[in-house]
Image 1 (cartoon, rainbow, N blue to C red):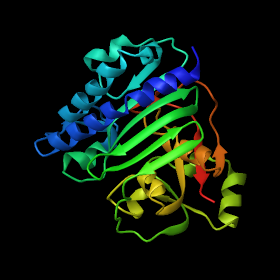
Image 2: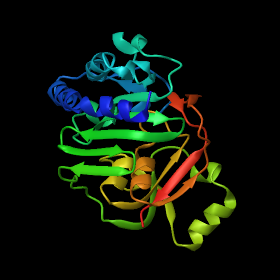
Image 3: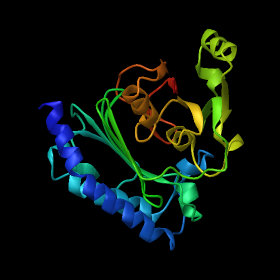
Length: 262
């Protein structure tokens, strides 16, 4: 089955994605966070009833389309998870609430992320910040942004490559790190920049010039790679185009990548 048919199917579900985002906003005020894992990383360890409700809204609709023939990576175990093909040609991913730790305390910058991928390569990415009304859609090498960027309490920071987890020095070859340092770039963990959002949102908002991901999660880790592909950004990639593997807190692409906006 052609890639175009899968793209048409996932794009036809965008109204469902927006409705799922409205559900997340509605449920936020009464949410009670729970612990599901013990990695020590709040955005991975915490889950809420909204995560499962939002995810199932999306999967129930997707399972009735040709997307059911895709492999699935989803954050939670909900009823429709078993309706997808574990040997599919494409990977369909859902992160119902990216930034659960912020969502759980009533903060506004969290997102819903849905994607279609070939092994290690994003084909379609939808990232929506429902409390802000800020949305990015990527299909192939096209990108559409709607809504207003968040007002972050951070100055636009050139020469900063932001990241949320891990240690770039452990993944990136020494020669590449030296080159970046020579060019004046710094790898900075997002906690040193702002508590308001993750590194991906900082990059999408234009608040930093670069983004780094170590062992990127399939559900949310390729968003900035898709941005870089669509905008012809500088890309340094250290992971193979293979299917993701089990890792810390979920399915991950072993390795790293970082991108720099021109």
